[in-house]
Image 1 (cartoon, rainbow, N blue to C red):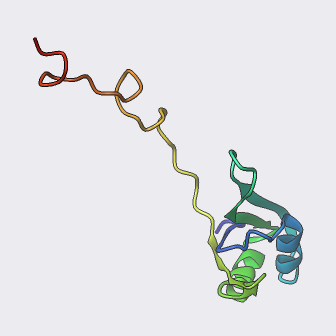
Image 2: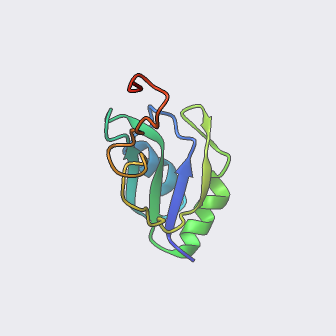
Image 3: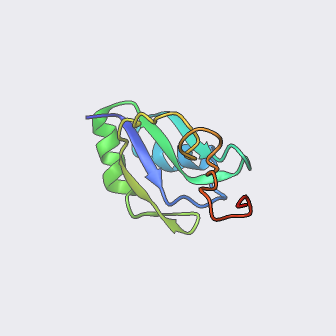
Length: 109
């Protein structure tokens, strides 16, 4: 079992210190990581908490899943490994995603 927990449905007001304090009651917290939006530098509403042992991680899941923090019911479970993403910006193809006109437009003679 993994020691790293996914914590979802966080309030945008929740800080890493709030996570640390909430989970410390259930074992030794070795790391907290609150995910931030790169563009706005605001919280994204989820984060990760790493406990020192798998047993403490399981204890924290049982105690914290569904519990309210800052007025929100938390979702807490074992963090899954990050999936590999393919490169690109999702625009598809070459040329920035713009499609060429295929006739029938203003170019007709």
